[in-house]
Amino acid sequence: MLGEVSVSNDFYYRINHNHIDEVESVYSENVTLNTFDNVGTDYSFGSEIMVVSDPLPFLNVNFMGNIYEYRIKGVINSQPFYQNNFNWSLRMNNGFKIMESLMVQLNMRYHSPEIEAQEREAANFSADLSVKKDFMGKKLSLTLQVRDLLKTRRHESTTTGVSFYSYNYHAMDAPVIMLNLRFNFNNYKREEDQHNNDQQDFENGNEDS
Image 1 (cartoon, rainbow, N blue to C red):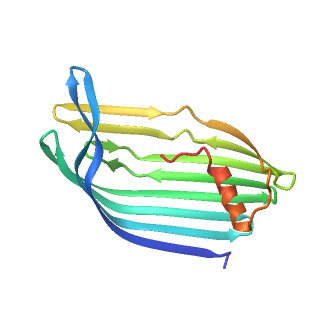
Image 2 (image 1 turned 180 degrees about the horizontal axis):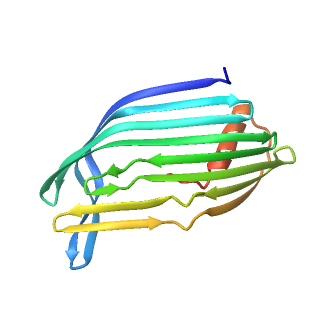
Image 3 (image 1 turned 60 degrees about the vertical axis):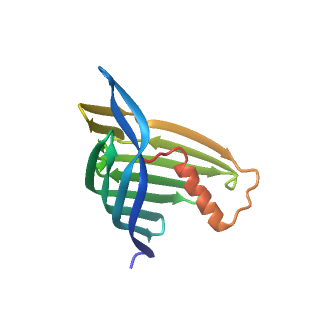
């Protein structure tokens, strides 16, 4: 057996009344109006799973998955609507301890196509890389972050309504490289606090897609 493994699994059924969503409508020719409104009720039924493992002394793996059926119904601009979709997402954080003062983390995320009242978003995948080096007994920390390592992060969606159809695409300039320098004036920390602090150093500046 390689290392320790911790597994947790939750099932849920959620109902959200008076769901607030962005509503798009035609304002004039070639101009659309975007507002927010209570459009109806949405339902989610699914399962969340988390796996934390230390398969090797220098490797920590955190895996999170969410699988659920999503439905939303209501009325927009006096027109009833109903949407449903099967959604799933995955997130994996891999931490590599090269030496006591040098750690590398690779974060990967995937979201399947998702729907809202009017909008349908395309699937999205992204990967971020972080390298952290400690100096002076962890009083000084240098963290190099590379966001959207594979240049895959984007927002792509289509919106449909009465008498209109719109397509939106946005992609950030990638990869984005950030270098953070941190000095700890008070270096006294409990072991679990230090672990949480290391995670924050890695994930600071990363965003979900």
